[in-house]
Length: 193
Image 1 (tube, rainbow, N blue to C red):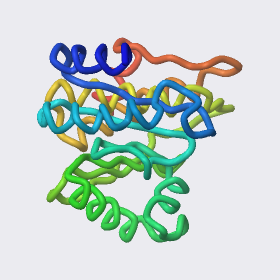
Image 2: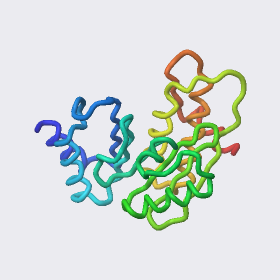
Image 3: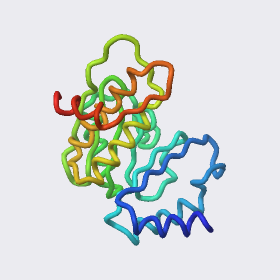
Image 4: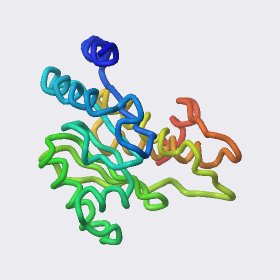
């Protein structure tokens, strides 16, 4: 109950909430059934609040919030194939965004990211060029953080995805650590591309 109360209070004070479920088993972390139900109510009570979710065990159990997932997770969620061409994938992302009434993003590894707002044309942003060895630890979190930050700041979908791809580029080139990316590292990449 304390978590639910804190989330309800927090929702009135922030521009974005990011929900990351890192556990593989239901009801073993903070985002259990009761909290997810409460987040659904928070969504209804605060329709302009951006809430973005990502979960290792899939997103089908989440309320109507924005979603960020990878291609395989998208295929599981929608019952489709992970191998569909990019054009078809973008169309499917657009349909899911419209059905849910929320933004949907699908990270595509070396192909970049695709995303859509409800009722708008889906967009695709390629990843930035890679060089040398890479280490993907932290890239997904960097993408999520930068999508949330950019959208909360009023960025369009394609702008938010460009920030996310710049952050991912910074992170994957940091070897042997959970990479991080700051504005000083991200800005030049966004401006150059």
